[in-house]
Every structure is written in C-alpha cells, then in structure tokens.
Length: 215
Image (cartoon, rainbow, N blue to C red; front, top):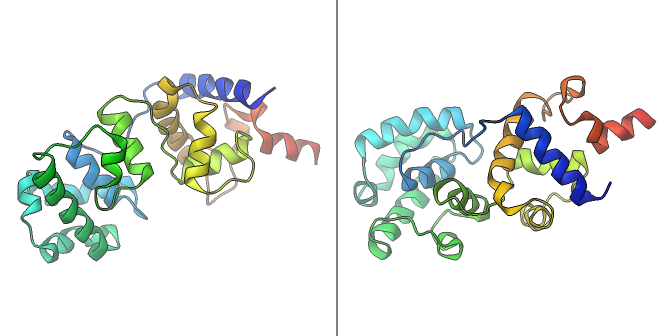
C-alpha cells in the first residue's frame, strides 16, 4: 500500500469513527477563534473555553480588546499559562485587526501569518474552520499520530509534516481529518499512556501496530 492509499484509507476510517468531529475550541466569531488558539498553546482547550468567558464578558469586541491594557488581559488569561506573552500577542493582534482590516479577520493565509502570535497552525485552523478552505493543522496530536501510522517517517517539524500531508490528504478533507486526529489522539492513540491499539479503528493499517506484531 502506498502512502497515498494509506492516507485515503485512514481518512475513511476516521470519518466513520468520528463523523461529527470539529474544533474543540468554543467560538462564534472569527476573532474569538484567533484569541482562543493563541491561549491554547500549552493549555487544554477545555480550560481555554472557560477562561475566555470572562475575557469576552469584559471585552466583547475586537475594538474593546484592542483598547485593553495588557496587564488587565494578562490577569484574566493567566490560568492558561504564559499569560504575559499571550496577553501581549492578543492585544497586538486585535489592534492590527482594528487598524488594518476594519476589525475583520482576513481570509488570506499570508495575511493571517502577519498577525502577532499567529503561526501556520493557527492560520490553517482559521482558514479551515472559519472560511471553509483547504487546511492542514499540524498540532501535537497530528504529528504524533501520522508518524505512528506511517504517513510520515520520523518527521517532527510541524511545517514539514504539513507539507508532507498536503501531498497525501485530499484538500477538501484536510481540516476535518486533523480534527479527527485530535479526537483519536485524546481517546485512543494517547501520548502519556500506551496507545489503546486493541480498540483502534486504524489498528490494521497502522505501522506501529505492524512493527510490534512482527517483534
């Protein structure tokens, strides 16, 4: 089986297993997803979803958050960790949205990358979830799982993993595929315990399981 064939098989298995998988960060406006994904660095989505409730109660718009004092924002987002740098990036990002984009999040990948605190993972998440465009979000679950499965071979750099997956995953499937990897990585193919291969929908396709069976 080629990597392309493997990728298509994995996409279909995950689609059957997690038909309704989506972004686990709560948001109802594009700018809120930008804020949440910055806060989610080294923090759980569940905690971010709680913390942002207080943030948006005090700063309910791009304009309000752009005008906020960094120290005040830091006090609210501190439970997410790295409070100072996250507050700095969020305030700077909202100022740029206000001043250069009329308070709207741009639907252009390169423009997103120019926003403070926004990297390729965040930009891809926005492109896929907000604008419905092709996207590959290489978070830690994605990187771990595609290496275990055998879609990539020992690649840990997020951008290199992203570039490899663009060649394997149909563009229209990329965003949902990555969300499904998050669900699978949390529940089955876990990081901090041995993966639960006995109840994995990908077991017969997975390189890791095959190697262990031969051993």
